[in-house]
Amino acid sequence: MTYSESASGLTITKERAFKEVCNHGLQSEWLDCLADLIQLDGTKLDDEGNITEVLASDVLSWLGY
Image 1 (spheres, rainbow, N blue to C red):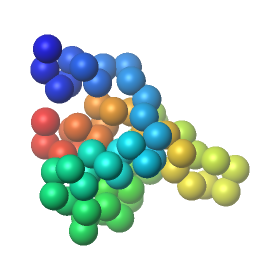
Image 2 (tube, rainbow, N blue to C red; image 1 turned 45 degrees about the vertical axis):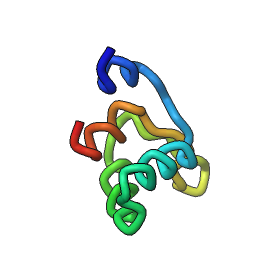
Image 3 (cartoon, helix red, strand yellow; image 1 turned 90 degrees about the vertical axis):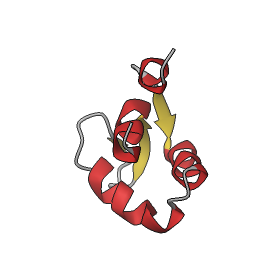
Image 4 (cartoon, rainbow, N blue to C red; image 1 turned 180 degrees about the horizontal axis):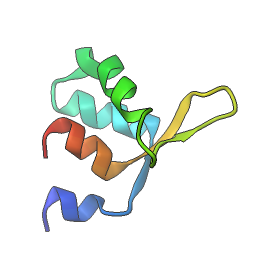
């Protein structure tokens, strides 16, 4: 099973997305990642407009998978 296949339809927390970005050595690009993810339909926001959940496949796409 590929990363993309394992992420299909899976929603993860913002914290989990941060962990994945850090695991790929891209912690310094976290704010850029959030800026891209917030524009996507699968991203869930709280009442104040903060990201709470994202699609795992969107994070993988941002990471280049």
